[in-house]
Each structure stands twice: as C-alpha cells, then as structure tokens.
Image (cartoon, rainbow, N blue to C red):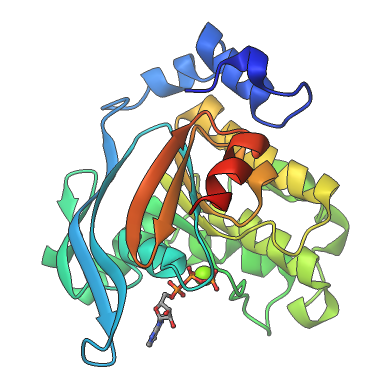
Length: 273
Ligand SMILES: Nc1ncnc2c1ncn2[C@@H]1O[C@H](COP(=O)(O)OP(=O)(O)OP(=O)(O)O)[C@@H](O)[C@H]1O
Ligand SMILES: [Mg+2]
C-alpha cells in the first residue's frame, strides 16, 4: 500500500484516500446497503474466446469487486479490458466460468431477465458512447429510466446534467456534439438510475483534463456518498489515481493489483508490465 506521505500533493485520489483512511465520507451512505462491503460482482474462472477458440480475450479470470469500491482496470490495448467489462456487466456471456452480480448468477438468466437486470442494477459507459442518434441529450440521458418505467428524480437528473456540464445542451442531438460532450452524456446516462454498479470503459478518453476531473469526481462521489461500486477502464494513470485500487490485465489475465494507486505508482507498474 502506498503511504499517503509519499503521494505528491495535488494528486487526484490523495485527498480521497486520506479521507477514506480517516473514515470521513461515505460511511453513512454505505450503511444503508443490505450488505455493505459484500461482493458487488464476482467472476469465477471466466474465459472468453472468439473465432472458435482462436482468440482468447479473457483467460480464466477470477476476481471480486466489493460493494462501495472504485477499481481502475488497466492494461495495453487488446489486453481484454473491454471484454472483461462486457462479461462482468452481463452485456456479453463468457465462453466458460461464472459471473455473479450480488447473489445473482448471470449465466442462469434468460435474455429478458438479463436485460432487465442490466437496466435496473447496472450503469454502463461504452467506449464508443452508444448514444441514440435520433434522441436529444435529455432523452438519451433519461432513456434507462424510460425503459425501466421509472420517473426521473428531478433533483438528481439536474445534478448529474450539471455536473457533467451538459445543462445548456439538453436539446441537442448527438451529431451536434463534440466527442467529449457525447462522452459526458454517456456518463450521465449511466449514473441517472443510481445503479448498484457502474462500469465505465475509458469514460475520460476524449475529455480535457479539467472536464475529466469533473467526471472522475462524480464517479468517486457515487462510491463515497451512496456506496455504489465503480469499475473504470482507463489508460490514464491520473484517472486511475482516483480509484481505491488499480488492477492490471495482460493477455486476458489479471497480473497485478495496486491499492491506493497514485499516478506515479501506476506509471511505475505500467513500465514493468
Ligand atoms: N468480437 C470479437 N471477435 C474477435 N476478437 C475479438 C472480438 N472482440 C475482441 N476481440 C479480441 O479480444 C482481445 C481483447 O479485446 P478488448 O476489446 O477486450 O481489448 P481492450 O483491452 O479493451 O483494448 P483497447 O484498449 O484497445 O480498447 C483483442 O485481441 C481483440 O482483438
Ligand atoms: Mg477496450
């Protein structure tokens, strides 16, 4: 574990890590969960292969994400990060192995039940945003609520929209937005239902550092204030420094974990991957 006094001042994650250590934020929010600190998602011996076994994107991966934690998944391009996220979230089914969301074994669910579970309990920020071109920003963000027959909590919707900086673009279509703006809409859409777990595939890749900081803080606060679980794929060591731990993938396998990562320790580990 990294000692806080070795972390350069101003590194994102430092204040959060120190606050965590002091037990400041989040504890009251987490107390409301049925099983605080229990498993949010568990993967057991998960393998995903493509092309009739010629490509092994995930190779016998076992991992548990505990509730109320923020994990960064890192690794070279092609190491299996998106595949990992898709299997862990029920977007894709593994070739073999088991994925459980809380107590629910996703492999035992039929397609409709799996779709409903994803809609109700999971938020997903796609690497390619996956916004609906014909819908404006407001409708894109509230789509998961609409599909679930739920009404928007107006206060929370306003808050999310404001925090991702899209309040003045609500009537625009995705084609009228920059890549970074589309990315922020995708983040808002994943958070609007307050899902148990948020999977985000490089959600800051198209953002300037300041806007990226806003999005990462929003994800951090989802964990600290309400005990949600966040799994973030990123190539950016400063983004990983917002997480409680960084997990490294290489050739479809988890090869290391850094707790309380800082940009410096992540870079250091990356160089020896
Ligand atoms: N549908 C598919 N068919 C065949 N091979 C695939 C498919 N999807 C992914 N792969 C392969 O699986 C491996 C892992 O891909 P994945 O998209 O998970 O990598 P990644 O770590 O997310 O990469 P990046 O950082 O570039 O997004 C790669 O070798 C990729 O070519
Ligand atoms: Mg990817």
